[in-house]
Image 1 (cartoon, one colour):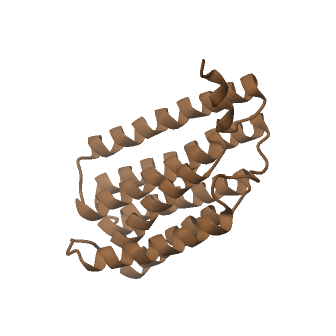
Image 2: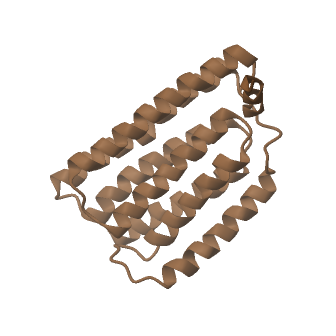
Image 3: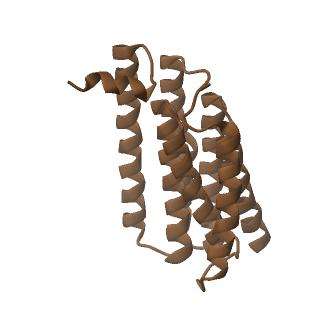
Length: 211
C-alpha cells in the first residue's frame, strides 16, 4: 500500500510541474482532473480499503475534484473560447522554475518536522502543491487560469490536512468539498460574465470597472 501511495504522490508532483509550464487551459483542466482522481486514491491508499468513511470520502474527492470541477471548467473554457494564455504576469519557464524551487523548499521544511504520515512524501507534496497553486493564482492573467490555481491550492490544503490530522469527521470533509464546489461554480459564472462584458477573460479588463 505504501508503494501505491508514493506513486500517487509522485503523480501529484508531476502534475503540479506540468501545470506550471502549460499555456493551454484545456490541457491544464485535464491535468486538474488527473490530480483530483489521484487525491481520491490517496485517501484510500493512506487509510486503507476497510474504512467505509475513507471510501465515501475518496468517492467524494475523486468525483468532485476529478470529474465535476473539470467538467464545469471545461464548459466555461469552451464557452469563452480560451484556447491559450500567451501573456501571463509571470512567464511559464519562470513559473516552472518556481515550482522546482518550491519542491526543494518543501522537502527541506518537511525534513524539519516530525509528523504522523503514511508516506515521507506526503508533507513535501502537500506543501509544494499549495505553493504551486499560489504561483498559478498570482502569475496567470486570465480569470480561468486563476481559478485553476485556486483549485490546486485547495488540493494542497486538503492533502496537508490529510497528512497533518489524518481522520477528520466525514461530515466536515464533505462540507469543505461542497464549499469549494460552490466557489468553483460561482467563479465559472463570473468568468462567463466577464467574457460577455469585455469580450475577454483577462483580469486587466476589471480595471475598467473602477470609476
